Length: 292
Ligand code: NAP
Image (cartoon, rainbow, N blue to C red; front, side, top):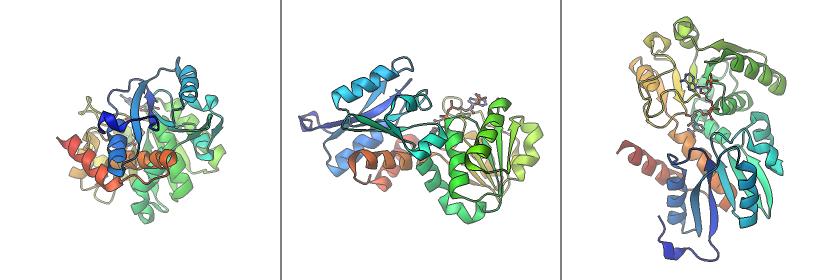
């Protein structure tokens, strides 16, 4: 952290709004970056509920707060209060970054960038193949948008605990992005072993397996996975979720959510400061912090 005597009348304030907020690693990531680059910024956590959101945004403008990240449960609610929302955030239906431009609030979705950067090295493997996305919340919407826009899977399966939500997400992406080869399923692991194992890539975009529920996984059936697969979990606490542990034991290539987290943060950082986050250093720092 910067020492307090560094802050003065030119210090710019950014932060994260959400509820609850105390477990976020974003303050650590951004404040270390400001310190490394010697930028006169501070990143603070703001505990904001849905009820207080509109007032909090008015306060943000009144106080000249430069920008915020937005997390649960506000990502899908905040768009209506902003002056402008990027095309990407509009289609995804979720905003995770707000920039205050002289009192005008602009919304972006940098999770999409984090997802693209994480799976870009596997572009050729995914091209023309089946990808299964577990989840139908904000993260899943970002994953579906990124897959359809940037990669060329032949087919996408959406699997979710609440089948209706998977079904409406399917219809939404068919109509919004004109991707027809998309199917919805309820998350019933014994019935889905074949669907999982026929997928070149499986992406968990739910909170299943996130600390403290580290023994949970979307499927614990080892035959869901095999050595020719890429398995990506958006969760990064713990770094190796139960799902990734099982997938790796079957020979699959496992990707955790830390790269996505750093990349989405780096994009937000760039939107606020017009500087590049020192990503490699931040990635290593967060990884050792989480492994400690
Ligand atoms: P969300 O909108 O609340 O959606 C949650 C999803 O998880 C829904 O599909 C929900 O299913 C499912 N789910 C939750 N608990 C479940 C359980 N016990 N069993 C089965 N399904 C369950 O949340 P979100 O914004 O999409 O976030 C999802 C995860 O992504 C979180 O862990 C978040 O930390 C992570 N994330 C990571 C990054 C990163 O940078 N790595 C960025 C964004 C989010 P139902 O529809 O049935 O409720």
